[in-house]
Image (cartoon, rainbow, N blue to C red; front, side, top):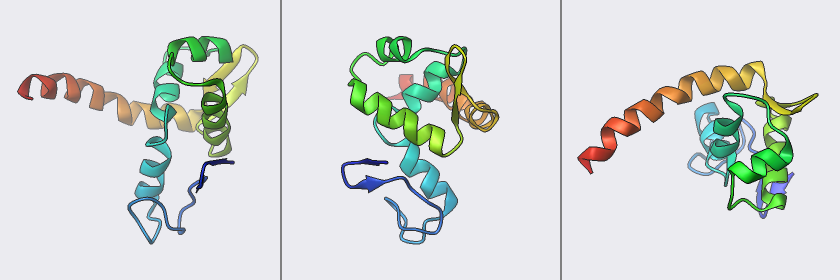
Length: 112
């Protein structure tokens, strides 16, 4: 699974920003890919079909969205559900840590 020349990041292997592949940098590499955070955010409140996700990620092409879902499934953050895609338990745990950044960002934006 690749996006261009960016294979799925793995701990211990070089990733963008880290030659040693520290776990946090592996996570940042994965989450910085186009629409990765958008997929997680849009699955945070309910399961969604591919078409629903595509509608919510309006400018994401079907191929980018499909690639992102495959990557997020491969690392255990998203899973296939009977009614589409869902955050896995690990994905929900990650989202619970990302969600406060949204609150922080709302307070930060007026300072810009």
